[in-house]
Length: 253
Image 1 (cartoon, helix red, strand yellow):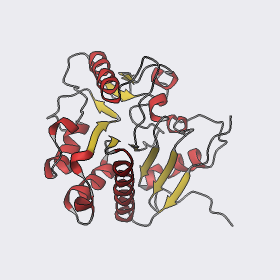
Image 2: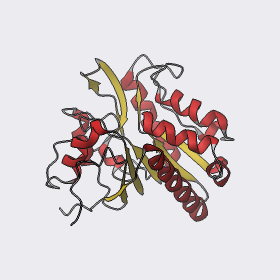
Image 3: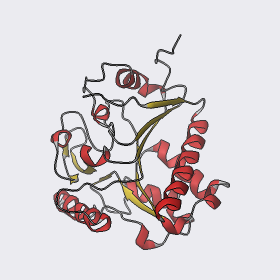
Image 4: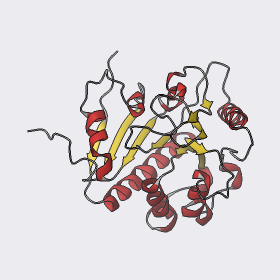
């Protein structure tokens, strides 16, 4: 198999990365709304996305450029906690962006992780996706944009090294046990992430530099890290890195 080569953009400070991500978000939203009347995005948790969401919710020109009533928000993964919990990815997006902009409540499709059973929450979210995207049994949803982060261990969404979710080929949403945190997580699976029209990794910080180097400059057939599984065959893959995260990359001569 020939793996598409990702686009890599190296920014300076983290603030420049956040600004570039906001420009991408607004541009892709405008294109999708112009072509089909709405825009679907799967959000990520983490500190870098939080700064992006704050830009979108607080700052012109971004806030005014978005048709908020035509944006549908989903989540790439969630912690198995209630929505008001400090660790909730939904709560983070709500506080940093969604509570500040005119998004209709019906456009916010959160994972109901307050369910006592993480597996049930995953099943219900798969049902939500199938209903919204009007999927047949074998179809995959096609998000306009998926935002992803990267852990120092190479995980993305809640796809961690060694997880059974890495090998899933049929289900849209799973609730794998993450031994590192002694907890369940609810996550979209590689097939759905790889079916997106656009995937953007947002990565900042020196602690990610070795992993970034290994993923972007390793043998493309090597799948040591979960993030290496994300490579949309019929979509765009963009890595936005700050200077620290990109510090170990070998630059073209």
